[in-house]
Length: 107
Image (cartoon, rainbow, N blue to C red; front, side, top):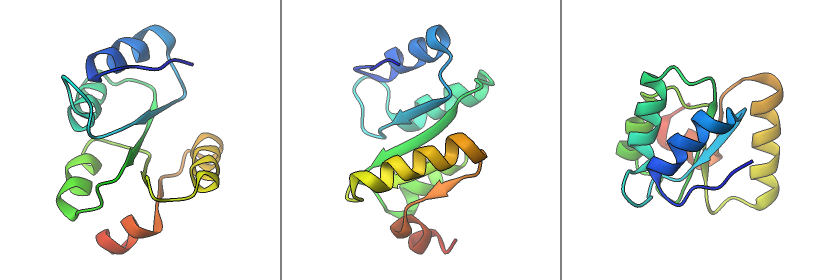
């Protein structure tokens, strides 16, 4: 388990720790979460990337979904939703999206 203060640190920690799941915010210093997801995909990192963000606009969601993310959770969701989503993603490997994201993206 690790915690990064910015996008560059997140990538370094993924390389060092080889986590099963990366919980990633879109808005981060030095390198935003969208770029981190892009770099991890280019690296073929074996990590399930889950976005945790307050952004639910279609453009933000689309910009992230193109980079093989496993889930997108809205920060307004209850903490138990986050825990349940992470467990589902970890155990099944399926994608998981907050209800608000499903509505925005017509999923």
